Length: 457
Ligand code: ADP
Image (cartoon, rainbow, N blue to C red; front, side, top):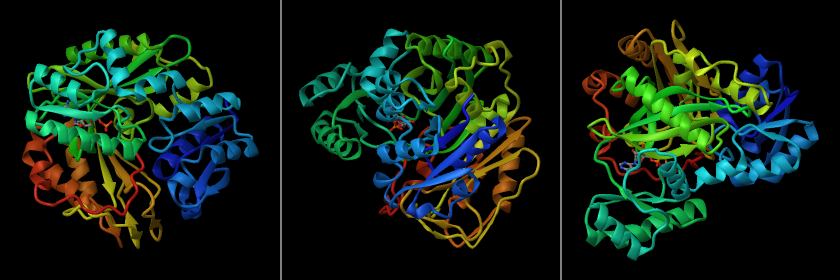
């Protein structure tokens, strides 16, 4: 087992990894930017190293600085968390070259899945159901041909996509050219690669994803699914497990399919296979995220499996300690992401938190690095806390989430707590009538707020 793990991240996820390391008896190294000197992840790690100025590009995305920090402190592994460098095949390769273990999949698998057009081809070959679309990146001529073949509406997506950026829905041939150029420009600006592909656009599908874990001895299991249909601008706001429309039979079938597909690309460590489910219950592959997800806690609550500890054990070469038949699903879990933003206009709201109190009680888990008198910096992602609840069934989980949100006090900045309460109190949410267009009822009016937060993931 590792003696010391460096966490190349900040905020709640850095703390989450520290918690797992402490339980495994592993020492931790925090890295931090000048803006995060007083952060909790720095306080709770055994050692800490400043890796640069506040801008992410100069600190949390600075591979040489992170590798130097690992070498100076003698860390034998790096956990990248989510966002930042978590899907960087380059960091994984540099780690390998420096004999530092990267806690994540093999760099080749990260590269394959990081190119969504290639990932589509690989998954199609493995027998995973797909939406019709282009087989690779397209220019305007090919895009027009593919769109005509599969029929409008279509969606143009960035090959290097993430965080909902570089995506454009096109409803008529006349709009294709402009949308293609905009998506290419956006993709180029966000990812440095302008390539885009075309896929059939589904109206109001559900977002359902499967969690997998694979060791280096050929063992691969799935931990069931999460439903993440509550989204704003293609970004998740609230997630739950299990997904209400899934029967045990469908879960088993999809789970087996995902396990076989993961085996086909020799997937190791933690990963998420994302799907859209249409109104007839048909699944179509979207992408594989080769990292820990923000929403992993809902899976942990229903399975009792600590995904971060498993990631660390797997990276250290240990075998998975359980078989598929030993994975059980108990009750229902919901996660609400609490962002520092105006709940009505979504304008970012960085600043100093003067009071911070979230009640505990049965079935409540709070993953956060925020506390009273801490400063929420404008340099990073706006998510400041995750409230996760577990109940015997969905109804109990909803009641727990409602009372937790109602009793939460965060003063000094605006947060999405009131918005999350609206969702929790929505009769359609209670009836599990969900789809990715659910939030339109709350977000139709406000125009996207001018962002002063940098987007981390
Ligand atoms: P990213 O990697 O940028 O997060 P994803 O491919 O995971 O992008 O898609 C994010 C969200 O965008 C989905 O959850 C869904 O709401 C929407 N989306 C993506 N592809 C489609 C599609 N073909 N039809 C309808 N909605 C889509």
